[in-house]
Length: 99
Image (cartoon, rainbow, N blue to C red; front, side, top):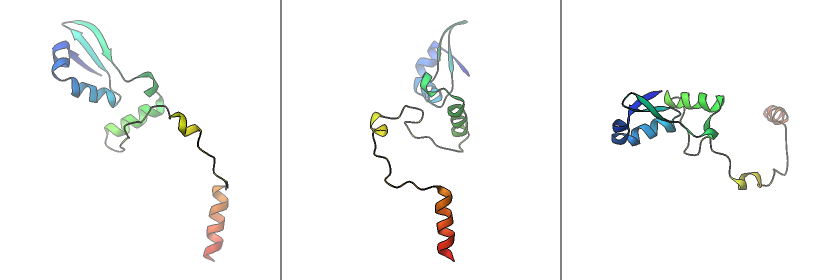
């Protein structure tokens, strides 16, 4: 968690917002009084999302711009695949085809 005064926040707002987008929190102080806290939206908070954000901060993974946001309505209306196959069945078929 970072701490910034109001003037620091004004001067470096883009930098602080980038930090918050990556899952960080910023405490905003007016002299010695805590007046606000910047944090990611609630939909982005989950243990898995926190771990992924940590990996992103370390440079191990790179998330897209819509990471953590709910899926759009059209996603749920997509047609289902016509033929469903188990992964193990596919592997067995591939092995038999090699022989």
